[in-house]
Image (cartoon, rainbow, N blue to C red):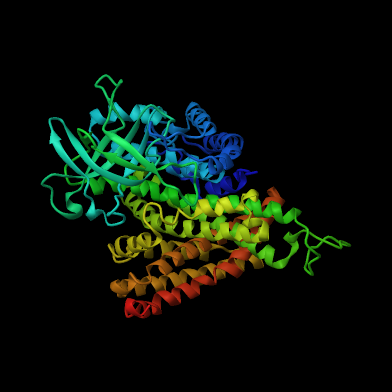
Amino acid sequence: MYKAPLKELRFAIHQLVGDQRLVGLSGLPDYSTEFADAVLDEAARFAEGVLDPINRIGDRTGAKWTAEGVRMPAEFKAAYARFVEGGWTQLRAEAEFGGQGAPIMLGTAVEELWASSNLAFKLCPMLTQGAVEAINQCGSQAQKEKYLPKMISGEWTGTMNLTEPQAGSDLAAIRTRATREGDHYRVYGQKIFITYGDHDYTSNIIHMVLARIEGAPAGVRGISLFIVPKVIVNDDGSLGARNDVRTVSIEHKLGIHGSPTCVLSYGDKEGAVGYLVGEENRGLEYMFIMMNAARLSVGLEGYALAERAYQQALEYSRTRVQGKPKARNVPEGSKVAPIAYHPDVKRMLLTQKAYTDAARAVALYAAMQLDLGKHLPDGDEKAKAQARGELLIPIVKGWSTELGVTMASLGVQVHGGMGFIEETGAAQILRDSRIAPIYEGTTGIQAGDLVGRKVGRDNGAAMNALIADMQAELEKISSSDAGVVASKTAALEGVAALKEATAAVLKDPEGALAICVPYLMLGGVVIGGWLTAKAHDLSVRQASEDPEFFTAKQQISRFYAANLLPEAQTLARVVKQGAASILEADPTKL
């Protein structure tokens, strides 16, 4: 049974990230720490009481294709109605169209709870949120007024349509076409891998579709973005005729069976009615608004599932009795003991917990930077925060999701043979987690974006500014506690390794593409280590306020410094020395 990690979230938000900086900012008039806590309390109740109990139902029953459309499990439909009733679709949206205007950082914390408790359910509001942001930033006023209120209220949902059979990551190969017809366009083509492309939660679905207007330039320069509703919306806001878009099939997948992944056909008959968003041939630029929002949301899915895997593994290990280990802390006089006392099982549990906490901190820190980049009054500080948030997004997405798979696998390992049995539920977490490193750009794509666009575009200025800030904050830690000193020392060594690796990336841009994934993983390990060292210091200073919680935090921080941060040295060595062996390799000899 999943339990929302409220203490961990509050510690990360209020102390590690320091959400007090958001209080009083223009655009966030209602934000306070008390508001954040109240939202998290309610979200925890919904996640634990509504979403978690139907998680296995989604996996076993799944979404079903019919000729009339996709049919969702009845329990999912009921949960969505309660989700809408609770106002959760409105949390991060602009107040102008019915949203609550909460910061990205709080939205990220809440989304973790949805992803941990029921990832398949969580994906629908996530995609709608991205579609809302794209229309709000790039659509006309008429489009905003026509679509946003009902999308924000949850009455309608939204999707993101990029991929085609011949065009996966290479969007220049898109063939879906659009022809002008008066004040709208007719769209023809096929899209695949469309998450929640069809369902029976709502009366309408607003598809955001990339297509090429006839006569447009070749490649990505000729891609435009269109609003293509499942059901045409009349001028008065009422629903009209069914649009010419059809769900051909849904995919049979490794995991997230409760989330329909659809093949959509546009224009089988007269052509699907679509409405141009913004200007012609700027569609990819607009779509990146959705993609960047999704990359943060998918990134948190990695550590959210790691949290769920950890909780389940911990519970199992505390009750599964297998011999008496020769280890410390075994109950006195015990002839047998739960496997949680076995040193290697402890190692796996500590690894799950330490990486989960670190990844959560990195994601919330990144989200906080995006909030500051949006709301700070000072132009220079605003730009610096925005650049840092953008720098961190590929790390959050790539590092966290790769960790999610590894931590879910460790969860199976802790269960032993029982983990390989579907009835325990450990296998579902592993199956569900595997899509996250692929969604919204693979880890390799994220890493290429990191070294090419985020580090390379400003010659390392944003990364080196972060490195300098991390080093300065670590050097300010003055505690004499041996554990804190060890965490500080290990974190500083990691920061130094990241600095050297960054210089190597900037020196050899071609070689950087060969070792960009190790560089991305290095960034995650080191930034996570910086925040974990800060957590260690805070935990020692506040130990008397909540001894059980803060002693546990110290234990985790000590483990991260001794067992996980040393990986930074290995990754840095790969970044500095590993490119040639990859670039010079001959694929025909593999």
